[in-house]
Image 1: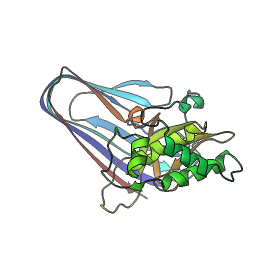
Image 2: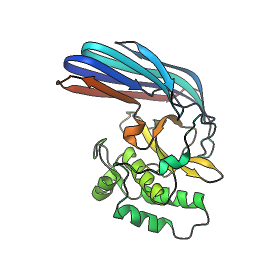
Image 3: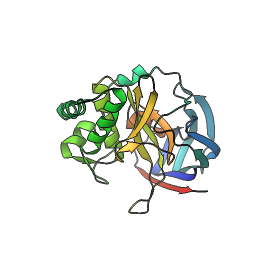
Length: 269
C-alpha cells in the first residue's frame, strides 16, 4: 500500500524568544515494514540541520533560532510503501538491547489495576506471544476511548483510575502491563490510515513488545489488533515523552507558547 502523509506543527510565541532549539525525530523508521519513496521536512523559519542517527535508528535533525518572534511552522511530507508483516517489525537499524525497555517511567509505572490486568491475562496461556495478544485485548477493554479526556502528562495509573483516555493512554497501560510481566515494551509514534468520525487525522500511538524467538511485535490496544500495512512508524521510546517527534528548548523565555498540529493521511494508489 502507498500512503501519502503531510504533518505540520505550528508554534506561536507572543514575545521574543532569545534562543529557540527544536530537536526533530520526523523521519520515518527504516525497516522492512515500510519503504520511503519520498520524504522532506522543512520549516518556515530557521534552517533544519542534520545532526546524527541515534542508537534506535532515529534520524535526528535540529533547528536553532535566535531572537525569534512570531510563528514557526515545521512540516513533513512524503510517500511510503508499506507491507503487512502480521505485526512483526523487521529490519530495524538499531543498537539498543531490548532489555533496556523493561525500565519503568513515571508515565508507565505499574499500579494495582495493572496487577489485576496481568492476573487476568495469565490464565491459560501456552507461550509469550499468546500472552501478549491476550494482554493487548484486556488493555483494549480497560478504558474507553474519549477524545480530550487526558493530557500528555497523564500516566497509565491515572487513565485506568478515570477509565478513559486516548491512544497514548492505551499504549502506556499496555507498556506498563508488559513490563510488569518482564516483557520489554516500548512506545511508538506514527500515523494510521483510517476513516475517522470527525474526518480529522492525527498522529497515532501503539506499542512494540519483544517476544523471544520473534523479536519486536507491534500491538495497537486502541484498535484491538496488531499493526498492518496502514501504519507508518516514525519514532519510539520508553513512553510518550521519550518518543516525542519534536522536542523544544526555549532559553530565557517568559512568554506563552501556542501549539497547533495538522495531519493529512491518504492512500495514493
